[in-house]
Image 1 (cartoon, rainbow, N blue to C red):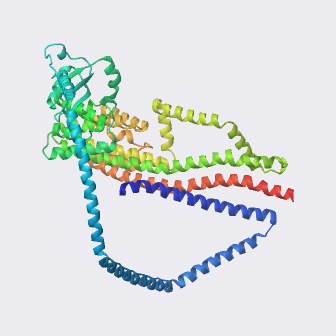
Image 2 (cartoon, rainbow, N blue to C red):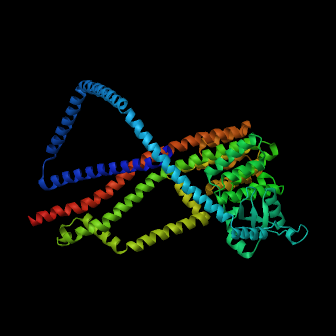
Image 3 (cartoon, rainbow, N blue to C red):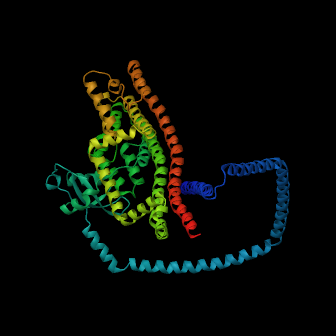
Length: 580
């Protein structure tokens, strides 16, 4: 319950602050407009307004001083009031206890009567249930149902496999098979599985304790169920962390790898995608593959970094320790990603709301005043009002086209960012050069790079293999270029730090630590310290962005609303003077 309350609490807090700052901004704008109108049309001297303002400030200071002067007396008064309230509460409790003792017999009698009524209802309910059970027994023992069951059992005979014939022929690629089998619990199920032959499917199901009735394949089965294989499943980060933690715990407890995967498959029985992944892994392990190869065959399900780390642990025999390290690694990476999402969520929401308020005022509020302003002389209408009226008219005429253009721009930008490498590099370079937002992205990339490099080298992965893994897992084109340059330098016998020297995307302190690690031979420890330092720097940068964005967005929204209000209010006074 606490979890759900925390989920629904932060939007309420955000909406409260948003409304609070909006009201403050509108009040300030209205007060400024009032002062502007008074100064322009009534011509009150500035020193008079200054005196009035100073008078109100001194009144406020005086009231605050009086409140502080009487604060001790108020505290004593509140203490006496609380003492009287406690005494009254004690008296009330005494009266309630006396009333309870007096009415105890009546309550017991009422309970006894209620118990009798409840027992009578339960007897009626049990009688009704007995009738239902009798009816079910009669139906289940009927000859018709017995004959239907016998016919079904005759059809579901255990499947016979020809181990030397067509059933044993292996294809070059995996084929989707549909099978019907009975589980060890006695439940008949229908499922789908990728394999190279019927014999492999049959052997795997028998090893799982199933009684196999049929195994078949066709073009339609491959067409409708081939896309639902484990190749299209990607395990979420939180589920991956849970999987690594649980698997490490089971292995440390002495449970075999196959039994541990069976337990995890039962835990994700309701998730068909994850269940398919675990079944594919169990099938690959049953055919004699290594655990790392079984992970790699799931394609998108598991990250390349995890596959390579497991492969290195198979050589050293430290699989549980590697799984713990990977769980901690992905936990920190997920925490960093959530910090960036949190930093960008608030400004994005405020920006969308600002644009929505701006469009609403131009489409529905400003047009109501256009008819009033058309009766005025055009020379007496301020320029800002004419601009707002023209913008409102333009937006009203071409609103649909503007929305289509915005959607097309977003779609084209997304497709270009995903598919055109120079465009993606230019966008990332532009963001990384921004004064405030650039540091967040740079610190995030440095943290990921150094943390991953440290983890790979601690588990004895070769430096060239480590760089190839880093190139595959990073999504930043600038860091991909740095890693490619590092691979070229390593092939020529140069140091790792040569590619990072004097590069704007790699901070100087991180470069110096990299050089120091190369000289001292303690590169993994140095990279780990760099990752910890820049992870903290990333957290501070995210906090600064949130602190900077909040007032900036409020000022922007207040300015938009204030300009529209000025454009509407100022001509109204001109019209009033004309009428007078």
